[in-house]
Amino acid sequence: MWRIILTKLSFMHTLISMIADSEILNRFGENVRILRKQLGISQEELAHKANLHRTYIGMIERAEKNITLINIQKIANALEVSIEDLFKTKIA
Image 1 (cartoon, one colour):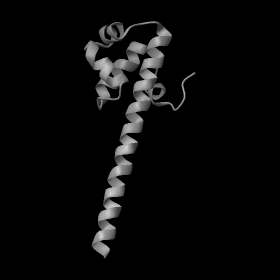
Image 2 (cartoon, rainbow, N blue to C red; image 1 turned 180 degrees about the vertical axis):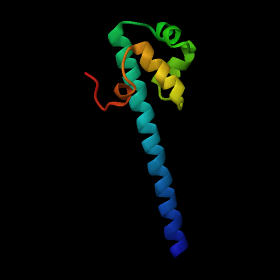
Image 3 (tube, rainbow, N blue to C red; image 1 turned 45 degrees about the vertical axis):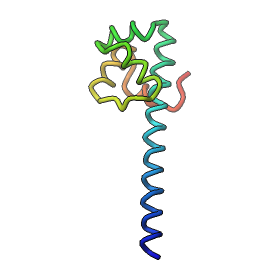
Image 4 (tube, rainbow, N blue to C red; image 1 turned 90 degrees about the vertical axis):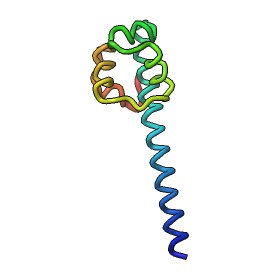
C-alpha cells in the first residue's frame, strides 16, 4: 500500500517538475520574442547580435531548448535588457 502511494507521489512530483520546467521555458521564449519584436529585429538579426545560430533563436522562442546561462546573457545583451527582464511574468 505504501509503495503505491510513494510511487504515485514520486510520479506527481516528476510531473509538477516537468510542468514548472516547461512553464519557465515558455515564459523565457515568449519574452525573447516580445522584446525582439519591440526592437523591430528578426530572429536572424538577434542571432547575429548575440553570436548564436538563427535556428537556435527560433527554438528558444518556441521553448524547444533548455538554454545555458552564457546564452541567456548573450541574448539579454543583444536585446539590451537585464537577464531579469527575460524571466518576468508580464512584459509590457
